[in-house]
Image: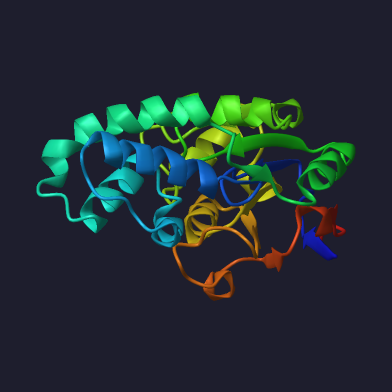
Length: 230
């Protein structure tokens, strides 16, 4: 078990990423993207190639997929591709995904410690909310924010700072739980501690390469406690 300690200030809130941290949504991405490509008359994509593209928001994902299948003009196709992707994703949202082992237990433990919780994802809010609800995870969170909730997305620090604001939590007393360098970079820039899971989507790179305060194999492994102030 990873016991995370914070000197000088107790943790009072935790911000949790969604895709790759709480829910394995790769199956949803694959289904929606393959159907989008078929609508556009483009060849399908190897599901294995999609995982490294996940994590930077739907706009980046769609553009990356179009470029991967060698679409003639990515920008000219983008608006239609986004419309078809949104249509299909909303239809299948959550049907081809699963909650990772230990997530419910981990969230229950954090709640039991009296911590305020927020979900912060680069996924559009209209996708994130129904997914959390369908998996029964929405009940754990005081706030939920998507990639379109703020002017910028992770790895920018703005979403974390705004989420801390909404939770009325000082960044130094807030922990970010994520799965990728996006989460870690945003946390470092915002002044938050960060712990990453070992099993998520880190753009095709080992999570061990990322600057973080710890890596866990399950959210159930995390315990947060304070150290005496200096």
